[in-house]
Length: 158
Image 1: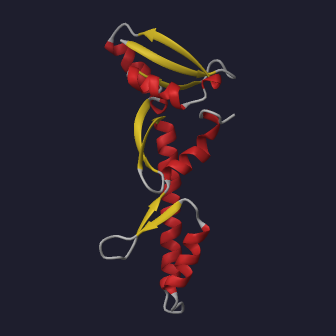
Image 2: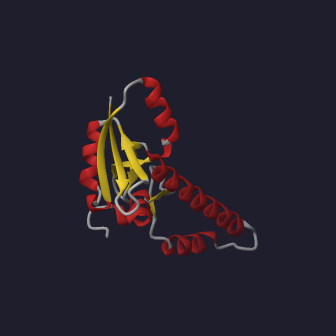
């Protein structure tokens, strides 16, 4: 079995990403600034050796993640670490929105929509699109967040 390994050139020993999927490897190289990475292809002798490697380096494994760019779904190859970082950030955003909504929902504030719209306009990573009932659906622009958090690893990022 072949392992495609991507080390950070600056550190020479830090494994940034890896995969056994050749397509993921090719897409990663298309999307990322390869001046930052050194690619190695190694063979793994047996399943036990692979299991040990994957257990030790699970957060660096490449996966395909589904993001949203404000209008469309975007598929991107990223590490599990990158994906979980986006998830953690989104959890914080939702918690903040929930807390603000609870504060505004208090009967002291009778102008909930006015304040909620002002808050939403201050955040450029959240889009509001009407659903069939016209109530609107909040969607976070996860693609934009991803690029902001990991922009230095993308083409033209450094």
